[in-house]
Image (cartoon, rainbow, N blue to C red; front, top):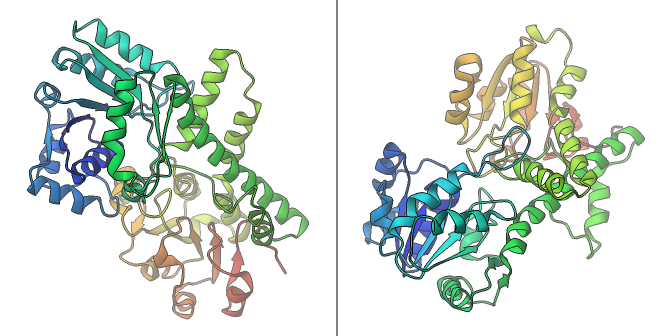
Length: 435
């Protein structure tokens, strides 16, 4: 099947590459000529495990192409995915200008009976706006459906190739058959494609992210209570997760959620509630807890490192908002680094892949270490921000010997408090019981 993908960012690139891998003829479009040039050479602008090999393989076999010419990509495409960004406005609403601009751009070039698929995360009613935009620019018959993505950064290829579910919003039987055919290679171990009306599909994406964000904020609120009353959140989490009605996923406390989805999607859901005249107290609370939690690591540094911070060296392990990606959008590392620099601290950082991203924001205001131990050399405290595997079982004796003051603030609860004290560290996790 001939497929066009408008937008070659995170979602568009994964979508295009994975559809090409199953034998489709895919063309990805982007307005950034430099990006298209790099992609055409198999050079990826993002870090996503396994994606680079799929892109290069399918370029070589002629099933995946990149272009800035939307007309050539769309003209013979049976399915056109819109996978452009929807950044938040100041009021939390989603900026649909890129989506509607893409719809206007492709409209004159659509073939008869083309299916335009909203892959971007968009508020309820966006499919209607896309349909109106296209209808004003072509007399040809076309269809618009919703197919929100549920990709986790760091595991996006796996999520696409082996999805928990594929949600499609459409009332057209022909579109149902077409989308079933397109996704059939990913459904060989069971039928997981779910059809519903368009507006329900649009809302499902926001609902899913808000639910996951709520679990994170719940555990972070609970971690604060554990610290106050002398309980250990790891034990509480284990007891909660054993309840089959609750489950174990997304019950890990930490320095707050970040990335390109949860923060903006919770805010967009709040805005949608306002527009609909519906109460949004719970969604407000999710966001407030997260905003407070993203400051918890800086507060712990200020509490446990002897003043003044201007004379202290702080090591930071992890910059990306989660392991497996170089994405620092809304990362909890940002308020930590900003606060440390404002306090005059000397900051040394390490991250397996996100240091080039950090350099774009911080330049030479922080020091970039080639390995975790170099970051910790002479440090008055080590702050663990991201749960990269390389940080899970370090050589603690080497680490203690490298640091000036053996203080570890563990934002991901990677280490056991008793074991850390045996190694001679002062240790502070999130919601962990102190002796």
